[in-house]
Image (cartoon, rainbow, N blue to C red):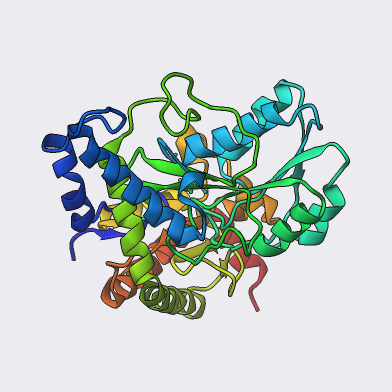
Length: 393
Ligand SMILES: *Cc1c(COP(=O)(O)O)cnc(C)c1O
């Protein structure tokens, strides 16, 4: 078998249909979408079409979709600009301990600017309790930001319930839906979502393009100052090919969603049950049923996630561990610690995230390889040796 790609939560392949849709907007219709002359019209139409597609997918209005350079920018914008716009009302923000760093590090920055941030605990499955959200609301609370689904353990949060609570208390509600958008159905009105972040490269679109949904009426300051693009809220010449690619990716994601949910969740469940049945001391992380259809995250006791990754890589399998790999540190993931795993167990975690192109053969082959790797690493593990010694009889 050639490479098996099981890291779709990190990024996805830009599918050929998307690339094809983008190509003419590099070389043929390269006009500036904001110009007056007719040549820019083609670009303008393409941008509007993508905006309509995305708005439809969310049950939103086209003028509520603002294109950005990706999920991180959307998260930064949602938090920093609402904090600024609503600071007369209060300085308190509520978020959770399991957010992506694009949210957490922005919140830490806001704390330095004088805002107060409550980082909510989650339960052992990574679920945020709506009651806990409600109890954290103060008269000075201006914003609640809870991710739609967690990028590490796949838990889907009770977003509609949290949205209803935010609405009841007159507090703005933002959700980082970078992992969920395109994978599960999201309706901003039904779920009382005021702002939503999403990113192209997590749903088979291009990298470096995303959007922020901002409900009409929400006061939000512009994030990039300059020209009048995106209704003066996000300056910069439109990334027309990127926007076209994102629109196409959303169109495809919506058209295939039901079938993908069925296919991926059945592969996911097959993989989880094989691991649980065939590999001892393996434990699923995250909520079992309210879970992204493509996410498998498992802790293997007595071994290091990093060692598993390297050995999987030698077998041509791309996966991810629960360490804070981006920072180059070997600290266990903040998400795994937040669900209560001790450090040494969190270190042994492995995330495998599926895509539409993965097959049953690939999943079975991966589990077979994983069984060998886990056995091999445990044979060399003093922790495992100790455990077996102490539990003999
Ligand atoms: C990937 C990701 C982001 C960042 O998106 P980029 O487009 O890579 O900037 C933010 N939040 C979550 C939950 C993610 O998975």
